[in-house]
Length: 246
Ligand code: BTN
Image (cartoon, rainbow, N blue to C red; front, top):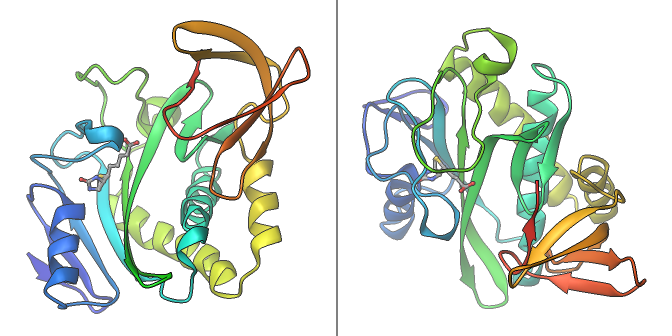
């Protein structure tokens, strides 16, 4: 492990960078830092899933960011800005990069990156956010039962220098976090919708085993997906309450 001038901790191996970062926060060792691991034994995905990432092939890191300027009810904005930051960087490498609600990064119908944010709250405000990002860079084959993973190498044929991508991505995230620090909510909303996969497009969704046709018409204050059905009904869903049929 070594520590660079930018407070970036790089490990060959950890259980999970989010877990390590959380421990650092709990022990009050840091306010703002980055933890990168070239291999995670227990990389965490959404909903307790395992995040597959072959040793030394991809970018898996957690950014610890002070978010005490933000009311706790606004926490979905962190997902929004981080998703947009990833799209902005990735669009230099691939076409058709989109945010699949709430915060998966897709190229076409395949997932290139995932985000797992863990917040601590103090009173009514957020305190610290651990922003965990898994970006598939150089892996050529995926083995887990995750539905549709892909790496940038599989898309562009290029090899990526992991720590260089980290630097570029951190810059992109910082730009977006600055919008949030400036409370530019409307600008952030617009950017998120601009990159949102299937926004306003009729498509198929699944709820309790039943499929239905609908289109995304908006995102609620707390990040809910707002769908309009063919019967002109507006339905709202929290994460995992509805599935995309892709
Ligand atoms: C998802 O399921 O889409 C979220 C995946 C998040 C994975 C990253 S890898 C770095 C960080 N540490 C973890 O244990 N998980 C996140």
